Image (cartoon, rainbow over all chains, first blue to last red; front, top):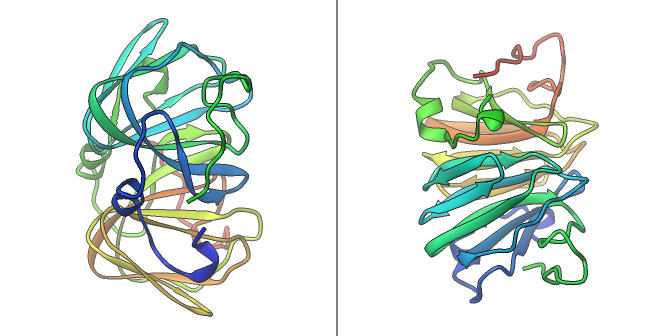
Length: 121
Length: 121
């Protein structure tokens, strides 16, 4: 991580450094949270987090966050906070790039057994 | 705030809705933090926060975060986390737009006596 070295974190550059969908990479930490970038395509699993809100900011492409009480459509420069406990399913018809913030240690699927391993870049 | 109504928060749209520099507007809340947008121009005061990291993500323009041990230059799509207790001074030669995340209640100047009033849009 680059905070200590006083260098800017270029999000597009970090996104260009890896492949694979639904595999968030942590680019910085902030008050016990992971600041992550993730490439998404297709439909994720329905899940919720009982101890953290879930912040999505679209950097590239478009996504839809399906919620039990309605969908949220997001394009570049748009954000949405999924409240803790709210069941949700992110979907992207085409590949999209997202800045994601969750408490460090949050399983991305809501279930440690199926979650992506934490990866810091 | 729009979380409850399941609507995307368009950052450029929110930024277009107000004038004035160094007056952050809260567009969402997240795990006890304010997600803010702010227009900055010129040099702010040197300050630090003893209870929160300070996340800057540049949305438009360029900024420099001066730190006691070196400066960080940031353009669009670049972020930096100022660690708690680190003295810093944000500077923008031309107007820049920034996404800022701090714990709710953090005085933007580091001092409640001189801080901007919390404003939710």
